Amino acid sequence: MQYNKITIACVLRTPPTNKSYKQKVYSNLDVIRLKRGVENFLTLDHNFVCLTDRDDIETPTITLIGNTPSWWAKLELFRPHLFETPVLYIDLDMVICGKLDEMIDHFFGNTFMLLGDSRKSVMGSGMIYFEGDHSHLWHTYNRNPIEFQKKYSKKPRYGDQAFLEDNTSFMAMNETVNPKWFQKLLPSTVPNPESKILVCAGKANKLHKKEYDNHPWVVKYWSSL
Image 1 (cartoon, rainbow, N blue to C red):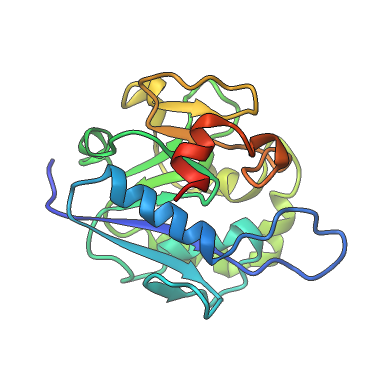
Image 2: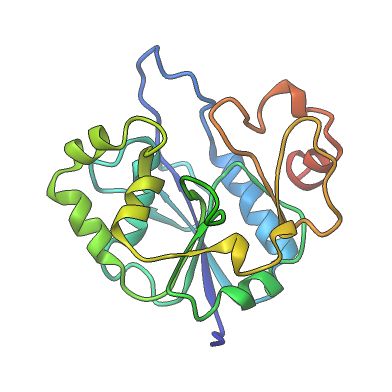
């Protein structure tokens, strides 16, 4: 199936203020970098939007409204009537380094997709593709958000990605397209020439770390934007 337009979405939720929160605080600059990466590597007609609770984001935004702390804010993608086109969600710690049109052409016609392959114990939610109405995910979560946050608080059944796996049918992105298009990014990574997305996964492995200051592909495709 082919479409004439797609929505590229990201999420930026203000983190908690308690001292135990150790992760890098993302900013408007990270949203702008992702948007520019999309613009550089996607020729298909598209909208870009950030779901956020902030008022300093310099892209089109949708206001977060629910009890969705941290990564749970991704579930607001499935609120009813938000999007009229297929949607590709991308985490702010992804580096776009290759043309996206061919990848998205392969995604079209798939109802719901998560990053990863079926050999993994848990899919990733760093990229999510979906078409149509998936508001059952939003409604299911909102029946008892505190209970779901507690249920999915320990590995391996962890976070929003485990919730999505358990509550919808999905395809694995890495089994739908060339798996070499996705490459896990580490400070020592030498990117494959076929890579389109560098996946910076894990709490301890973030693009803002000093180890990435001189990484050639991070400099070329992320920090220089």
